Amino acid sequence: MASLIKDRGFDPVVVDVGPMTPASAHYDFTNQRVAKLAGWKLADLVGTNQRDRIMTAMGMGAIKALQALLKVDRLDGVIGIGGNQGSAMASMAMQSLPIGFPKFLVSTVASGNIRPYIGHKDIGVMFSVADLVGGPNLVSRSILTNAVAALMGMVANGEKISLHHGEKNIAISAFGNTEPAVQRISALLTEKGFHVIAFHASGAGGSAMEELIEDGVFHGLVDLTPHELTEEVVGAGAYVPVRPGRMQAAARSGIPQVVSTGAMEYLCFGPKESIPPKLRKRKTYFHNPNNANVKATRAEMSQVGKVMAERLNEAKGKTEILIPLKGSSVYGSKGGPLYDPAGSARLLKALKQNLNPKIQLKEIDAHINDPKFADICVSRFLHLFHQERQ
Image 1 (tube, rainbow, N blue to C red):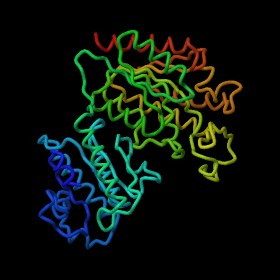
Image 2 (image 1 turned 90 degrees about the vertical axis):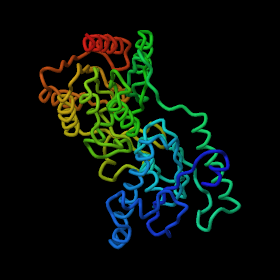
Image 3 (image 1 turned 120 degrees about the vertical axis):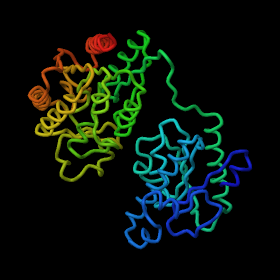
Image 4 (image 1 turned 45 degrees about the horizontal axis):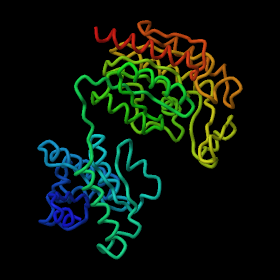
C-alpha cells in the first residue's frame, strides 16, 4: 500500500500499531516508537498479557503519532488496515482527527457492527472481503488498490471544513418525527441569511454536532430534537450518544440556543429481537421492520427533565426552552401510538423544578410540527442571536 501511494506521487508515512510485528526500518513509526509515545516500553506492554490494555496503549500511541504529523503539516490523509484488533487501533487514531479530514479504513470486520470503529467521525470503510494474512492476493490486491485510490482521491479532490468570514452557521437537531418543523425552521433561517446544518439525532449525529460546536463551527443552535439525551440518561437504545454529555457543548461554548423536547418520549432500537427482554412489555411502535420505538417510563421522563435542566443551567450564552404542549413528535401526539401526556407532564415538571430561573421556559399551545411552533422557534432564536451580538 505504501508503494502504491509513492508510485502515484504521494509521500507515505507508515505507522505500525501491531504489538507483535518485527521491527522494520521501513516504518516511519515502529511499534516500539508507537508504544513509547503511549508511555510504554513495547516489551513491558506486551508482557502485561492484557490484550485490551495493549490495544488501547498502541491506539493512544498512534493518536500521538498522527497528531504530531498534523502539527507540522505532514498529514493530508490516513488509511488504516487490519482485522478486529488492527481496525480497533487504527480507527481509534483516526477518530482523533477532525471531521472533514480524509480517512479510510480497510477491515475484515467492516460488514458487522462498525459503530465502535467509526464513532461519530467521517471514516470511509471498505470490507476487505478476503483475509489479509499472507499479503496481497487475487482478491485483496484489488481491494487494497481501490482503497488507496479512494484515499488519494479524497486528498487530491476532497474538501475540508473551512469557515468563511461573515458566514452565520446554525446547527439544528432533527428526526423523522420532527422533520416538518426542521424543514420550516431551516427555510426561514436560510431566508434570514443563516447557513443551517441539520444533524440526525442518531447518537453519532448529535455527538458530531457537539464536537463541531466545540470547534467553533457554529454561531447558534436550535436543539429541536435532543432525543439522544433520553437514551443517554436511560442508558438504553440504539441512539445512545457516541460521546457522553449531550446538550453540554452549546451551553459551555456560550452560543445562543433555542431548545425544545423533540422525540424525547421514547427509545430507539433495531428489529424486535434487539429490544432487551426487560423492555419488551412496554408500549412499542415499529417505525419500520428494523426500527422499534419503545416508550420511556414516566419515572425516566422525570429523570430526563432533571438532567436536561442541569445541563442547560451551565449555559454561558442566551438560552431559551420552548415546550410544544400538543406533542413533541408525530408518535407522541394525541392519537399517536406513544401518546402519554402524563409522561410529558412529568418531564416538564422536573425541568421546571430544576431549571435556573435565568433561563426562560415558554409553553406553546401547539404541536412541535405545527408551523406556528416553528415560527416561534425562529422568532425567539433571532431575538437571542441579535441580543448576543449587541
